[in-house]
Amino acid sequence: MDVSFVELISLSSLGIVTGFVAGLLGLGGGLILVPFLTFILEHHGVAPELTVKMSIATAMATIVFTSISSVSAHHKRGNVRWEIVRALSPGIVLGSWVASMGLFSHIKGTYLGLFFSAFIAFSSFQMFMDKRPEPSRQFPSSYMRWVAGLAIGLLSGLVGAGGGFISVPFMLFCNIPLLNAVATSAALGFPIALANVLGYSVSGWSIENLPAHSLGYIWLPALVLIAVFSSTTARMGVRAAQNWPVKRLKRVFATLLLFLAAYMIYKSITL
Image (cartoon, rainbow, N blue to C red):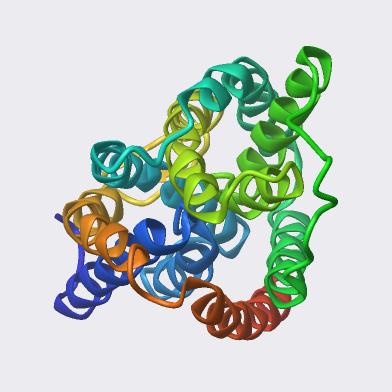
């Protein structure tokens, strides 16, 4: 692979951390991966206008593998609400294709970076607030399930996240227990990632000045290294979610997200 020793260590470490976080909190890891991949790709010599886009696409591709690992572990514990996965998946796939095959290639990297930063900050705010929904609120009707799935897929495709930053708060809003929401979010990450990976590959196929070993906007060396390590540590995160104080950890993670949001704003306005 066309990576230096420092990049090898950095990408492997990213995989270890993001896999654990994905299993623990139900987040696909993109919220962490995109800022660090942007930094690594910049030092790898990738053109500034491509760094954010390739980071988003590569982060999304890793979720295909992370979600399989974490969902398998959650399913064995009976935590996944598969009826919710089936209800939201059609809208999610449609929204993902609209984002990755259409909007993604036409929006400048600067605007995608700023959009990503806004959603990191929003996710952080949601974690800090930890609002409790009204006890009477239930999962929505079939029409609103399509709308919710469409929104999750569309926004995930634009920011390279597995949807946990939207789907977990949405399910908590509908009075789904936290552990079930985390597990179901991990399951939703698979159709989100698969649909978007197809879109990123097609929309980036004809782009010039991509680094070696790229599949459209996806940088394969990073995908392989991160996927290998994250698939292993995702199961560790699932086990930790059974016993660790997840709500307290989410606030710590929210603080980290604020720093990453600030970094992405800086990188976006200096592209």
